[in-house]
Image 1 (tube, rainbow, N blue to C red):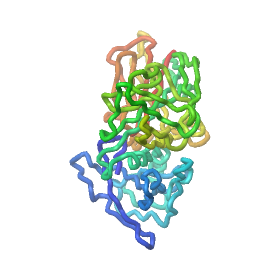
Image 2 (tube, one colour):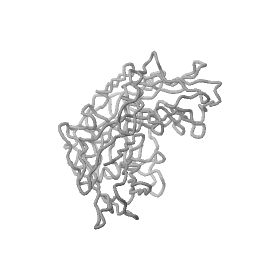
Image 3 (spheres, rainbow, N blue to C red):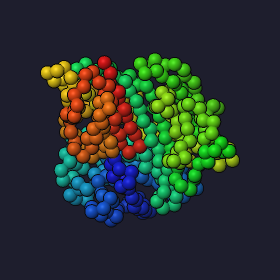
Image 4 (tube, rainbow, N blue to C red):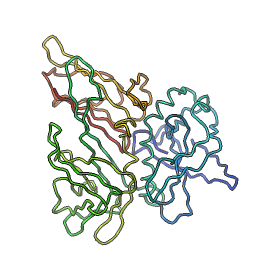
Length: 392
């Protein structure tokens, strides 16, 4: 069970599949609405427990079908039993990392929408358009102890640059992608040694370029990394692009502060090992990737307007949110699913920062109006974060 947007609000329930293929479970069994264990969203993971290694056990995700399938089921809104029909088992390929068929679907959103009290079919479809990030539960399952009370964390962040003109909403089609950064936080059982005596290697499943990019978006250097040229850190002689963080027991790759970014996140398991030939973890980073084949189709994107006052200073920031339908961006006016899913939404205007999670605002009034400021919108969902920096 994963509550949208909150790493701390997570639990699990195991259900067995009978010999005739049927199963049932009480989705409220472990829920306590007065504590952090709230039943907002369930992610159902099908597992073949006969496999020896946990990384090979994941079969797929039980979902409701549609143009975009619904993976995170809002069980707290159910008013009746949810019959998800007869499903295929999904076919996640753990060798190649192909996750194109990793969903087990028996019924559609339209066929089951009447089982929800307040969510309409259209609202469920909007939720489905941007809920693939919850598949990060696969990484949690694979990289955890036996009862999943401790697990590794994986965060992938994307950074964009965009231009802005006062009093006009921005168009995200004009944004420029700088690239991605990765942070892998290890559970306490795998404590990193950061004094240079042990080196750690993160091997990508395919090719990606590590690029150093100037503030204006111009690429300075670009170096290809792959299985033959992996990323190596030892905590003592770390390069500018990465570091071992002893405070958070984490492997950090492509540091935004030093202007390094990955050009792509290849599909499949990234493997973390040490120089004693010990494997510390397998991470499918593509599951946290908000970037679709059409550049940005798997999550929400912002549009902002900087409103100026009579002194020609920016006094307000207005926000709209868009999703991609495979052809173009469309504005999402019902933001129920967005606010339920988001773990962070901040508006930075020069040295002023406004956290709007909880307030669900679509505009921010500045404490101090400013002239032609630098503006940054940062927003994230569990394990996936996007940052868009606007300048004139």
